[in-house]
Image (cartoon, rainbow, N blue to C red; front, top):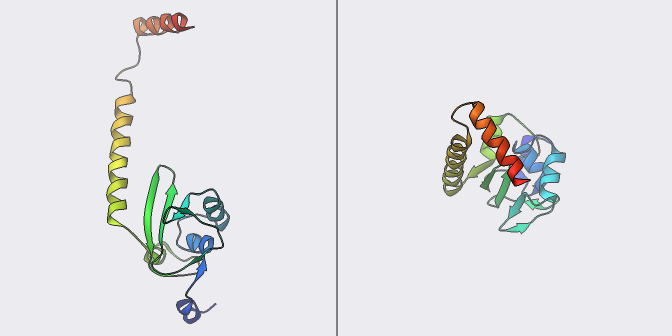
Length: 134
């Protein structure tokens, strides 16, 4: 498919667009994510063969993060990351929310880390508590 034909395309399959936009490593992973509900449009579960058009708002869950993106351009071909980034735009609210959640996870991880390696006394207390709870 030539670039002229690609630019004139008004719709493309959802799984193919997600792969071309580099949101998923393979088209099979993109299809699986859509089928399992990790990609939604307006709060509704979508199908991998759904047509994507410019202006469509998608919610994409990847790992801990959920991104709200708006489709800006269409492409059936996977290209470099700088070109793929032009296919969509993440909403400012989504960026802010992801930053807040990342900060919360970072702080939570710091709180859970032990201050020091347990000494002999701490190990005895833990052992006693284990036996007490059993």
